[in-house]
Amino acid sequence: MFNQLFRERSRRFTLQQPFPCEVVRQQRKTLGLYVKHHQVEVRVPLRVSQRDIEAFVTLNRQWIKDRLKAEAEHNRLKLRIEHGAKILYRARELSIEFRNHRKERVLVEDKKFIIQGYQLTPARARLIVERHLLAKAKSYIVPRATGLAKHLGLEDKLSDIRFRKTKTKWGHCTSKGVLQYNWLIMLAPYSVIDYMITHEVCHLKYMDHSQRFWSLVESVCPDSHRFRSWLKENEHRLYY
Ligand SMILES: [Zn+2]
Image 1: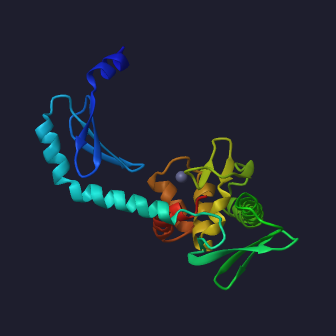
Image 2: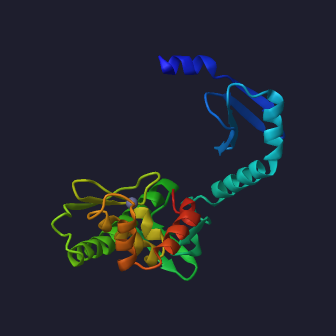
Image 3: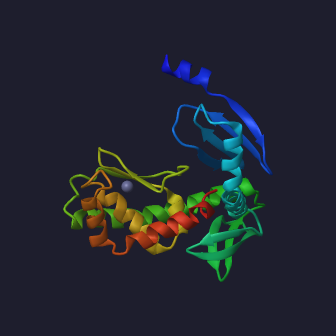
């Protein structure tokens, strides 16, 4: 019922600014700006005049332009597993090289991230990188997470450690004590990986992001905010 009412009263139209700007009228008290997927959306209360909306957008024009630019830059830097592309590996920018070889593997030499394989296609190269990072994640993260859980007296709560590539998360801890890590984290510096290991292990004790949770994280991994901000700034470059 509410939803139906809501839909009937909300209206959409497009403003002609230097960029297309969708206006959505809805039940809300303030005007809000959203930039996503190169689209600008203004959400406004039902009774705001078009002139006020135009003024609001004009006032925030620079902010919108900056956001659109930042988004384009994110897209440009997004990881592509292709010969000649750049990859941010352990905080260093390397060039991806496809190398023809019978044996499939990944090598890091100087400033090169070499993907070896026979007559490589980008799809095959992505698989080889996946296999490589997954193996690295298993051998690096499992002993550390297990050891830390033991050290903190939480080994009884840890039931399993799993790996999967998710779209938005680096790690996850379920109420059943399953720790889950995104194997793409193996592209990050070791300090950041260690922080992620710590973060999820500490959730075995506190399932929230409360003060006591962060104190426990800090007791194992001081200055964790540095690693969190590194991830925030760079994570869009680690996904493919
Ligand atoms: Zn968390």
